Length: 342
Image (cartoon, rainbow, N blue to C red; front, side, top):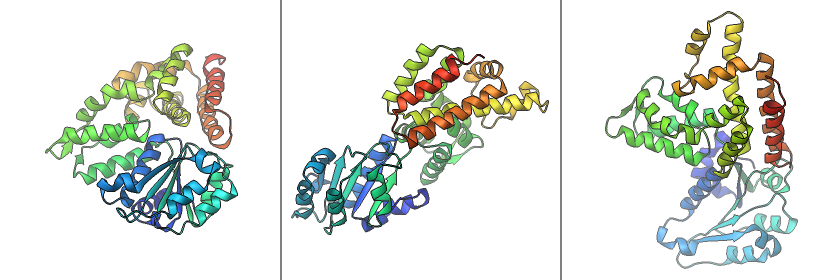
């Protein structure tokens, strides 16, 4: 069964015990790890017994010899009531023998399989989504709505009130993997201390220092300026830190959606350029205004729409094909920012 976003909270809290094995997969590796740890903590009550109650196996070894997994499932420990068996580096395909081992799990143990991105055609993903006794928990790069929900929840849990504009600013500036976003929210909570309220100015100071490092502004600036060599270096920095191509393309698209909005407001004589800039919610961080204006004046409406559509198609291609995301990225970059005449 595929676990939908609205089911995730209940699943992580208690529903996971209804399933014989759980596949945790997606392009956000930090979220995959966080969800796995969260599930293990629910199973392993006594931290001192973790060495006896937690087992880690490699998928390749289990495929070659399913009896290895059966042995751990059937063995009991005097020091723990149930075990958490984690299978790493899960591949896109699964054989019938291993599938039967998961479905025959009648022991008081939980099996968690960890994987990266799996296409809808993956037999492993299909197996866990279609079988009612198995569960598939997707962990994709967090979008703007996800960031907003996470910030609101964390602020509420810590009894912190946000002044007007704080949430919009955070949503527009926090990007990347779950772990990096969560870390920035932790900084905000620490900044509040005993005050119980956080202002936009405080958030700006906290996030502006990490803006160049954790967001995509440098990458977009290099692309707009035609500095492809620097853009490629910046891209690989993001990719090597665990950021997926999908997250990168999505944020480039979001950037140009905002450029398009200003372009249309000015071209239709609804606002002057200055008024159009002031109408943007959340506002553009002052350090990035010059780069934003450069993109606004460099590209026509048709070109901006083409960039947005190409980034969207890149995300679809990464999710639905087995083509390397890096190759998909190169194709889009050279089509839009090298060969396209501005």
